[in-house]
Amino acid sequence: MVRTLISEKKYSSHCKGSEEIEPLRSDGLVNSSISNSIHSYGVPVNNPMNNAVRNSMSDSINNQANDPISSSLNNSLNNSLNNSLNNSLNNSLNNSLNNSLNNSLNNSLNNSSNNSLNNSSNNSSNNSSNNSIKNLSSSSIINSIGMEFILISAGEFNMGSPMREKRRKLWESPVHKVTIEKPFYLSRYPVTQEQWQIVMGNNPAYFKGEKHPVENVSWNEVQVFFRKLNALENVDGISRIYRLPTEAEWEYAARAGTETAYFFGDDESKLSEYAWFLENSGFSTHPVGLKKPNPWGLYDIYGNAGEWVQDEYHISYKGAPIDGGAWENALPSISTPVRVRRGGGWNGNAGCCRSAERLFAAQDKRLNSLGFRVVKEV
Image 1 (cartoon, rainbow, N blue to C red):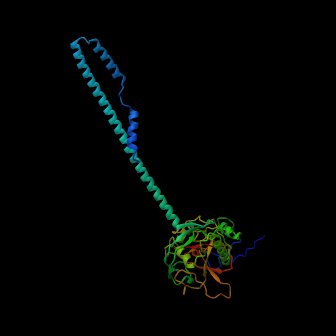
Image 2 (image 1 turned 120 degrees about the horizontal axis):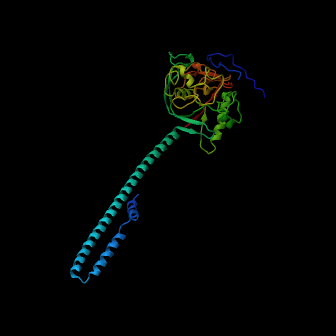
Image 3 (image 1 turned 90 degrees about the vertical axis):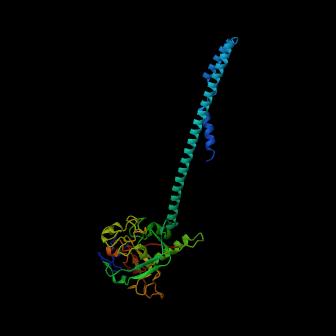
């Protein structure tokens, strides 16, 4: 099959509406320890040397039994020796028991102290790890086809660009305060070709690669993707709603609490650290997640493939919703509606990648520089 790609205008180094560049391609321790210690050290009760002394003295006393003086001396000597031996035995036994008891008690206390310290340390470490896992799981989730989502909290921000911002466009005015009333999950990366293939059963991308963002898909086809993804994810009876972000949700998440031209400041020379765009893309998309994320953990929010949002395009923000909802016409259009796209792309210059930059395309248009990102409602 031969693919024919119609190039859009000609190469340029600026964004002009939809006309951007497109190439042709325990307790029992002490007692137990004392008992073990006694058996281990031993108690000198049947010492052979003491028995020899006793036998020798007994023989001497028997031989001199007929001599009263000798008998008296022998009795005295025997008593003295017995007392001395008994005292020695008692002292030895006491010393041995005391040493054994002290050693056993010290070992038991040391072991108990070490075990308590180790348990306390392990419990503290485990608790810290568990808390970390819980915190991670509460702010990041993964669905059945491997899409990872970051929880975006509710809040307020100023939408649009101020007059002083370099490369700003008139249709980014007026700056107005928007309140994101409900938190939502936003996919950490743009939808990849692998994920599109799982849901849709085909791969329409011009620049092939499983981990590359899917592009060359119209806004209409993206709506079909969401109908199929919602059906795939709701098989267990739990309602899960996936959709495109609104334009306000997209800019709120891209800014990540900042009010500068880019989430990293106003110095566009740093953009190559965060995005694939005209100056470094090599006129192609790249696998998602290779550049630095924004402060809220979103990758490729600038450049690589631009992103469809839900809103229809309006020439200015006059009359735009201030609650973060999608701005769509109540009545159907006679002509093909034009939708907003955000984030620039691999073929846009630095100005196209600003947080406030707005581009547009007819909703049935396919561009090899345009993909999308997913919202999962909380």
